[in-house]
Every structure is written in C-alpha cells, then in structure tokens.
Length: 510
Ligand code: AMP
Image (cartoon, rainbow, N blue to C red; front, side):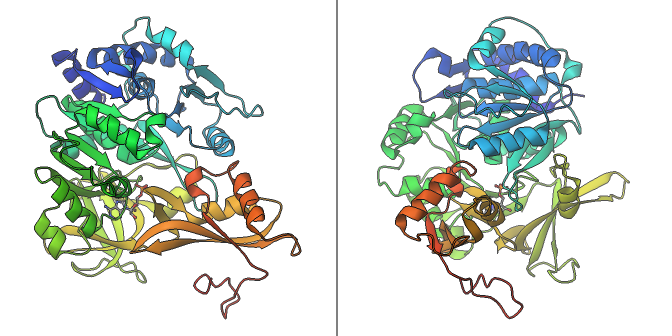
C-alpha cells in the first residue's frame, strides 16, 4: 500500500539524485531543487507535519510558485495528510472562507506578502523562515504514514454557485490512475523539462507534477514578477529549455498573438498539452504552424474527475473536425451521455449531459454532503465494487470511434481566461455589498469565447450616482471578496430589470 506516485518519484530520486526537479524564473539557489533535495526536504517536513498538523485535516499551503510549495505537497502526502493550495491572488474574505470550511487547519505561508489573517478564526500559521529551518534538519517518514487508496491526496477549492468556494476532495488512488494514463504525454527525452505554468489551485497544474515528476521531468515555473508582462515571460521561456508545454488555450492564445512565439523561441519543445477550456481549431492550426515538430494534445476533465481524455490534434483533424473532439477516455473512466429531460442513456452520436464514472472521480465536496449528493452518485459494478459517477454539467456526445465532444455548459458556469467561474458566485459577491439591491452577471462572448463579465446592477438607493466613478468604486469594493479574475469588467446600472412572463429576471433580454 501507499502512493504509487510517491513510489515512482522516489525511484526517480534514487536513479537521478542530482537532476533538477523544480526551478523558477527567479534567479537564486533557493529557486532550484534537485530530485534529492525535493525528496529529502519533503521527508523532513513530513516528520514535522506528522506531529504538528491536526490529524485528518488538510494543510493549507499559501503562496504562488516556489520550491517550498511543491516540497509541501509531497511532504503532506508522505505524512498522510491532504493539502489545500490557496493562491496569493485570493482576497482575504475568500481565504477566510476556505479556512472556516476546513476548520482550524495548519497554514504554511510562503508568499512574500504576509498571510491575510482573520483574527476571529483559530489556526496556526507557519512562515517561510520557520519551514526553511525545519527542512534544513533531517528525518525519514515511515512508509506506513503515506496517503493511499481513498485517503485524500489534495483538496482544491473551486468556484461555487452559491457564493462560497467548494473543496473537491481527490483521493490518492485517483492520482495514481491519472499518473498511469497521462505519463504517455510526457515522453522520455534528453533533459526533459516541462512548463509548470498553471496556478496550483487549478487541477491542470497536476499534469506535470504527477505525470512529469514520476518520470524524471524538471518542472519550470514562472514566479509572479515574471508573469506581469509577455516580454519578461518570453525572456524566461527563451532560457528555460522547455520540452513540454502545459497550459490553458487562453494562455497559449495570448502567446500566439506575438509572432516571436515559435520554435525559434522554444527549439526543444516536442509536446504541447492544452486543457481546461475550449481549444479552438484556429488556435490549433496556428500552434501546429509555429511548432511543426511538436505533438499537440487537447485534453479535458472537470476538477471533480481530473483530466480524463486526450487526443493528438493533427493539422488534418483541426481542418476537418469543428469543434475539436476533447478526446479518447482514460480506459478506467467511462462517459455516459444522458438525455437532458429523461436522464436515460443516449446512443452514440446523440448529444446530452456528460456523466463521467470510474477510477478518477472525486469523493465529493469537503463537508458539503448536500452539494456532493446533487452532483455525485455511486453504484455497484459487476464485481460489486463501488463505481463513482459525476454529473458534469457539460453537454456533449460520443462518436463511433469513442471520441468525446463537448458542446458547452448546461448551467451558469463559464471559463474566463482559463479560470472556472460560477456566475452565481460573482452575483453573490456583488449582492453582499450594502449599496446593491440586485445583481445579474452575464458572460460577454466573442467568436464563441468569453472575453469578460458584465454585471447588471440595481442600486438600493435609486437616486445614487450611476456613473463611471460609481462603477470604479464598486469594483474596488469587490476586490475584498472576489479574486481579480472574477471582477466584472463592465458594470451596467439599471432602474429596473426586464422580466419574463413568469416574473423572473429576463437574462436573455439583459
Ligand atoms: P475545471 O474544473 O476548472 O477543470 O473546469 C472544467 C470544465 O472546463 C469542464 O467541465 C468543461 O466545461 C471545461 N473544459 C475543460 N477542458 C475542456 C476542453 N478541452 N474543451 C472544452 N471544454 C473544456
């Protein structure tokens, strides 16, 4: 028993102790970790966590990209504890909400800025210096402590429609199945280096952590300052030696807007993995043109199941099949397409709601049996073991070759620059402000892609100013409760909302 991912990592550590496991764009020795260092530091930290962290509770890991973040993820798994990453981009109210939901967790804070504390919540915060002195010591955790089977490996908080983030619990066995399936996207090559670009709060970041580290890849991350401009990002990329790219299509589209994003900038790149939102045919064709020798993959999966599909996107596929398929399924996962009205399974070729069942489906939402029951079910397999199933909210169909196609959402969830956003989450954030009577948030699309959010607002005081300054003021207040990417770009004031014949707010008319 134990974690097969940890076992594979330790094997790599043993074979290549001096190989770089993680490095960032920030210069300095503390920004680079070898496999041996990552292994030894996470061993020592696991020792500390085992005696100091509350049993059974996830450890909150606060920061952005740094060797200490990755060290802690491994240390938690070695200590038999789940970890819950929280990004520095989260405003104080959201961080407090997560801490409150977990219930007095231990917080390891690695950001340059102080941890945004809410003094009314009881929890312990251990900072960067303290952790650095702990990992400078020594200690070997017992194999028996490791997460395994149904033990939660990580807890990822994602946007919730009722205005509170919800924590997706992913057990160790799902991580192992994910590793088995996606190792093939990280091919062996001389000095393999992958782009660990995606924030740790987003499951796409796990592609190279799990499938890459288990095969000896070096993970390259951009630290925050470098992410501020495309010019500094490109400078860092030119030095990186990347062989594998992992990102959302939105990020790659941003890069493609600059003609210098091509194989001269990244001459070693042989694999491009995209996930998290619609991968448009036009983007695929541009990528194939700019990186003619790289293999380009579309992959798909909600946080609740991890990524479950993949397909090699060739020029021919991108020219002939629109939309692109999201791919073939991990053989340990099955997609069932159900009729939107009756819930009955549909034959191939017919579109309905996508249900995913099998090895990588989450245990549900942390301490939210109501939400878990609404989205997850369980049934017996022929061998009477339990099969978990997740209702995705995606509309889609399977073709005769077993390829899954996604045709958009059936609910109010959108993808904005790769981030998953529930419109209800943003509406709740706005409605909480005392000056607001009612708020409706709508996505604004161009060429089938959400470009920004628009908030339609009725003020509590109908005579209050409704000008540019009032809109700016509202946005400034929202920074307290919502991450930047969720704040609507456009604010439209209304004296009243149009209503449907049933008396509901007419979202279409808005
Ligand atoms: P997240 O939980 O943030 O990973 O978001 C999952 C949702 O993003 C899915 O349920 C889909 O709606 C969408 N999604 C993810 N990958 C793709 C893809 N390759 N093509 C289309 N939609 C995608």
